[in-house]
Length: 108
Image (cartoon, rainbow, N blue to C red; front, side, top):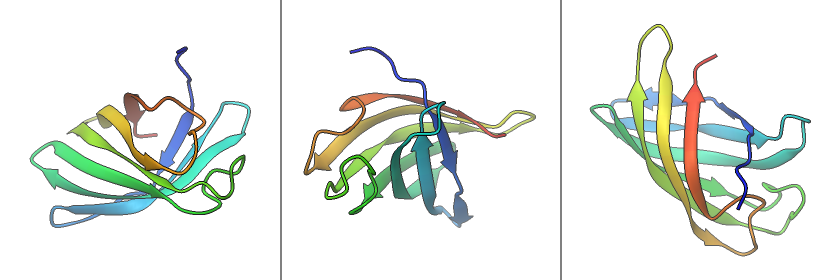
């Protein structure tokens, strides 16, 4: 499978070790791949997370629901990053991206 480059917007809130917030994934041309909600736990610099995608969360497949999950490493500094992997944990359709892959986020 060929790599897909997409823009991800995550608006995360942290309370103690709990991390939550909405996420949006879209292609460079603006087409939305998915809208979801992240829940996770930050232990040290490791974020274990699950992204839930409800009905309408994948515009091209509005009845599709599912979950992605994985672990990322958070690095804070002049340029803060989250890097790690994801895997589709459950889905009622074929997602518009690979069933697993890598994520690299840089705080804008």
